[in-house]
Amino acid sequence: MTAPWPIIALLGVLGLAVGSFLNVVIYRVPRDESIMFPSSHCPACNEPIKARHNVPVFAWLALRGRCASCGDRISVRYPLVEAGTSLLFMAITIRFGLTLQLPAYLYMAAVGIALGMIDFDARRLPDTIVLPSYIVSLLLLMPAGALHANFWQSERALAGMTAFALIFFGLAVAYPSGITFGDVKLAGLVGFYLGWLSWSAIAIGVLLSFAFAGFGGTAVAATHRGTRVVAVPLGSYLIAASVLSLFVAAPISAWYGHLLAL
Image (tube, rainbow, N blue to C red):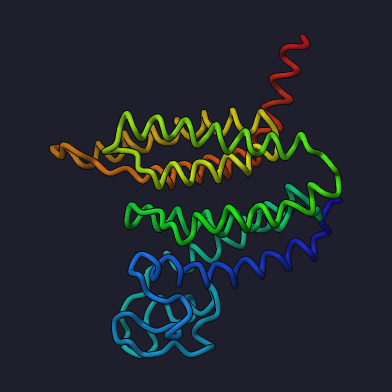
């Protein structure tokens, strides 16, 4: 069922709020800090942030990117994460419509943004986020599977999870300095979501992951000349490839099928 624009806009507002929370997760989880306590505060002066200064995107603009207490600069990445989460929530809502699988893919988007940014910053994919996401994702997709009684879809999701995990496990064994077992665990989660959609989503997801990693690795290596070992945020590229696959897998599959029919 196609989502009406008021619902899409509402989920965009929800995305702003979720993005604000993701900023907390991105900052605190790599530092092994609680995401609940203490309340949001300026990392420079440690002053608690007032509620009116914590409104996603708009507060940053009103404060001109500076702390209201000490005037220290606030990174532009904070509003970008909030706005990006909002836009992605709306895009996914348009893509899936008002279906039972929509919450699962919104969850995937939120977790993907958090993991992608953490991996980009710290070259880590925390188990505290990745492993529970397997259970949450399964629970969120179960209603959709039960409604349609489509056992093939569930089996395909498990096949996608297994395929992605095995591919990246093999790469981690062959190239341990470049691919971690955190990447392997994330790959399984990505494969589960893409497998739920279609076989073509799995194939395109794998191809895009390698393409993104290749281009990204080349760019990182080019900016670290003289460095023998370069840590590449593979998880970030894997997430970007999987999100793009959600939108392009079906059109590419239809286009390729059309070519074969000519």
